[in-house]
Image (cartoon, rainbow, N blue to C red):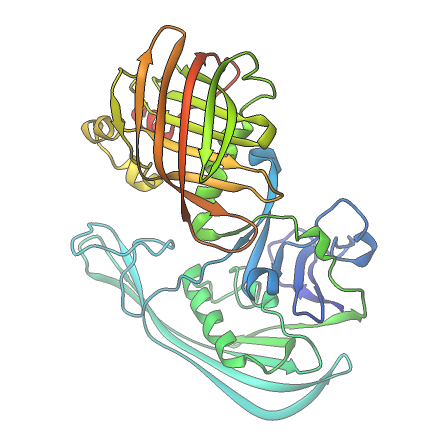
Amino acid sequence: MFYQFPYLCPSCSEDMEMSIRVSSNGTSIIETQAVSTTPIVDPKYDDSEWVPGNQISGPLTNGRTGKIQDWKGEIGTMFIEVQDEVLPEIGVRYIDEDLTKAGTDSGESTWSVNDFAVNVKNTDKQETIQGFSATIYEINIKFIKADFNSDGQESSRNNLNYQFQLWLSEEVPFTPLPFQYEPFKENHIPPYNLSPINDLVVSKILENIEGKGGLVKSKLLFENQEWTIEMNNVRSTPPVPMNKFESLPIISSSQVDNFAGPLFIVSMLRDGELKNKGSGTIRIDDQELTARSSWKVNEAGDLVIVVTAEDQNTTFFLVRPLKGKPGETTFDVKNRPGGSTLRSMNKDELAQHSNYFQVFGLISQNTFPTVISGFQSGYVTIESSGKEIISGHASGEVYALQTDQLSENETISFEISFASKSGLESFQFRSPESRVAGR
């Protein structure tokens, strides 16, 4: 089934629309595009090389909303980023829209949402929309959005009160995707809520209309203004072409950095860059792989030792930022902190953090890569550190992210040994630590 809604965007340079395609198994995809163009979700493009849609929902995403991300230029692949439902807590003060909670003495301006309520009423009124019998629901939303200055004093208080009318039809398969756009989200039109507040509103709406059918029309009423969208251009179509999506990695939003970072590092390795370089072995669980190895210290002092089994598409990177060539000793391991934590480190904290080795990697023996994003425990021993050759071994438990389905990090055992030869002339790696140190 295919249908469209107007895309409410007064600031857009031309008229826009949302195109939706749904299958009987619950899979749906949505695309926003200019009215003058044909959307890629149209069946005429099913045999093309293009992956259709901006977002997807269905069994593949466990019923959640997933963004279709094209990062081929950065990490060599497209993937589906499934949104984590992280919602603001009522009465809690936040520093930003990422829902960073304010400390007891944050010294920053903050905001909170209070007295939040979403009430849904079945009017028992029926109306036919594009040939579908629909029931009208009235939804009343009320809350207070408060802002606080850096001294913790309330600086403003907005009482929000607005309504939606929803026409829902059990003859149309339900999809959450229209609720990710106006008039529910995106802020092209009032009430211009913060994104986390819109997420909270939509979450409560979807919770209350579950099992009541698909959206065929909606109306937003806010301060004597109305915005209405109604489905149009309805037609039967073949099912969503799942072959376009079943080969894409599926990652939750909270795991995107863990997924993309190692892939980005791997993408900087040129084919054949380790040819005629040093040797090594990689042991993962009970499997031992023969590998090549090379090392480099860049101008910022970042050391990277690469151990790769090219035939098995498996590569590990041992990284020690800022400290240059290592001495002959055993090093403890530690993972890189998040960006905000790293940027907040002073010179001494950064120097202490850089004493440790980190690990990243990629195991791609199957269709879907397993991404290695850090140590759970372990050590790195440097046995010799010469002008051309650095040799040693590493062992421990590492965090491994499976990408064929939504999952959290698992831990797997690994061991690597290396007699690594200086090289990697074309490998333009630079650690985030060295970027922070160079500020």
